[in-house]
Image (cartoon, rainbow, N blue to C red):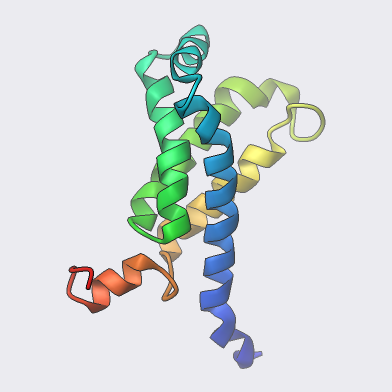
Length: 137
């Protein structure tokens, strides 16, 4: 099965594209049109309202960065924290499966967690930055 090892860069790319696309899709309406409302919702959960801004930005801008493979580990860390809080404060009481259960944010958190430790892979701007000495050419 060593021939599958050569496909690991493709697997990391797929992980990044899926996580990034989903996060951008969920973060876009929060950042562009519902930022204050989202901050109020987060405050209603007993958390500081500023965490709502962090959440929206982590989802949208973190998702964009993960899509590009730029600052991937940091962005994935922010997304992982965002999903952990979402599970804890919003979805946990609904159980794993079913309507508003935590299976979807758990899957997103698992993708983000893996990217924290595996990085973006060679098909990413992080790789281009490291090869060019930190300067984009």
